[in-house]
Length: 630
Image (tube, rainbow, N blue to C red; front, side, top):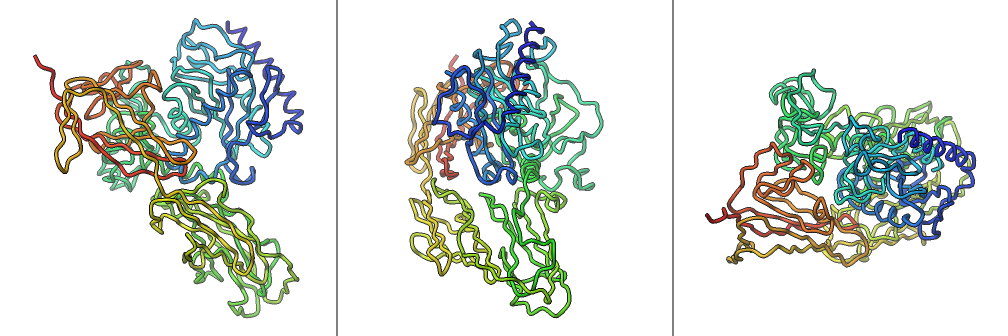
């Protein structure tokens, strides 16, 4: 079996080498424009384009074990994975930094190797993906590997991408739970939990985050950690006091309410050990799928995403001195979650430009002789607290010019017009930052004027970005426009400020209690199910979430064994493949966690995140769990 797989992979590598030689002939074709056949070669499909390939972070998705007839399944799996990814921070806020590509390459056979067991037959597939660490009896079932050389060859078909500006994610045509992080991230495409595997594996592959599991082999506690202080940013041997005194690890976040539930502090277990090492949060995406990255992990991921791009996208040429009779400009990236800041300095002195992307040197009345002008672009995101991270090239960039008043700037006939902007073909959310960049005539700075429902909106000098969240847009649908003053250049967006709605359906309770001023209460004496159904008045996927007793928000995915089944709550939780799901009350992740039933009354909240990024207000109901009689 091993030699058969090796032969298949050698042939795949040979065919991909041929494809690379003909890469110039591989077009970018809309997904709906063709139906591949079994003899088709790879086709590069742009899924999301936010800017030039060489100036963006490029997520390249590959599919393995999808035949030509199953390519619609690959597209559906990819869409589901992306919908979940865009609901998770920091991907939600930095989505505008990311291009997404799919390389559609049909496999000769359906499925992947060793799925679900080591005795499963080998499959003739493009990427040679396999469970059990590539069919290794000494590995674990969930470890899903890929032929790295074949994956790299397919990703190279996306012109302009390279290892420095991309991340490969390989999806396997499988409903078996599995994935892996490393040079390439992998995930099963069709498991109920699979869309949550992808951000977890990106935490490994992109951010260098470590697993917070307290086991390696499922069902087997990991024992006590005996190594030195971990290099991991989110594991430590230090006490909270030692972290504060040494200003080490996550000391800046200690005591904050964790984004994934509980309080950031010191929680034992991680790095596949049950004890002797500590992590920041009770649970997070690197420990339990369904929760968010906590603040410590999120800070790491912000730096990792931002390091793949340059905050300064373009600027006035600076290879020779510029005259003092002109404007100088920078173009920046535009996060969806918050505008970048720009600080201009002349000979080290800060200029009062209030965030403008352009400075008019004529207004400065410069004395004869050379001067130094700099523009420093910084990401002020509250997701980062470490000054070293803030000052790194990922979040701070500076560009400089020598200004010589003796230099005369030539004539410039550049007309003011828009050059880049937030896409207008889809609604923007009520909390989004919308941007509009313009050309840069040397004799003036085009002014962008914003209107919401026809009323002027004041932005100040930094008029290339408009933060809708700061305007507290009322619920409903609105029209936003940006116009270059004195021209007919105008952009129009629809603002979707009406969050999606989500409803719940529970299995039959013993009784229902309704009291004035309190959420409805359902009384159960044993397991019960909850189905969440989201709906929106606009096209696009909606992600539902719930939380119990104020714990972390948890992404609703149905049930681990069936995405169409409701979520099941039980007093002690349900064990599935040696993990525990649905314990009512204090969560339980593995069989050796405390299984004591939390009888009594619990509050379950639920909400939705729509395609525009709107988060609905949380609604709630109560569940009282009573011990069974007798």
